[in-house]
Image (tube, rainbow, N blue to C red):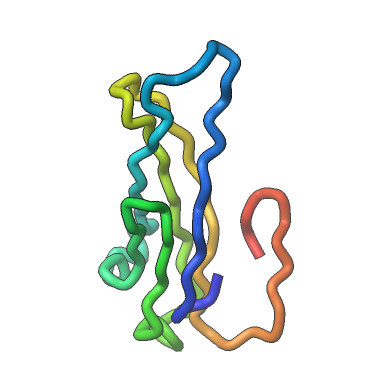
Length: 101
């Protein structure tokens, strides 16, 4: 994703064990420690909207971020997705299966 943009993340909760009492998830985002100075510019809302502030533009080339979804039912089950925030203008995105450009 590019700096200055947002992306709605979704968590697919499996139903292998029947209907869940609380299918909601809690979202968080972390930035690789080498880029910690930019962490304040990358946020995720309680509904899963990931935002990369336009102030990141041209601050660095790209920042690896990890989005985490934790089940809100207290089970501790979670999953993560790693992607890159690109801080330079690009003409088109090509997403690969692992989330990197």
